[in-house]
Length: 61
Image (cartoon, rainbow, N blue to C red; front, side):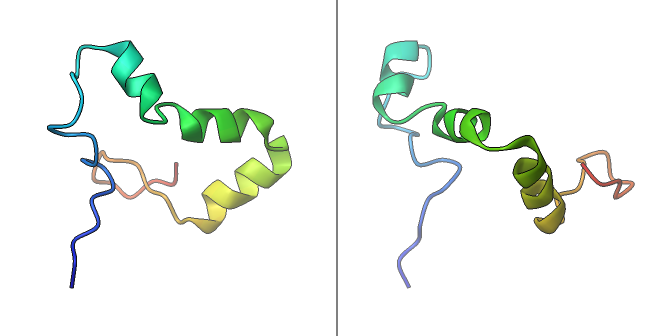
């Protein structure tokens, strides 16, 4: 099975200190999508994802 890099897909491909490199590789795409999405729909998507905080207590995001 081929590994699909999600979080680290830009590692080794761009200069991490360059905002231009980040933008050129679709940086902030998720933010752009979120800003165009209806608030209620966005909240529903976050709730449906079962996203939890990183503090370890399991509180919903």
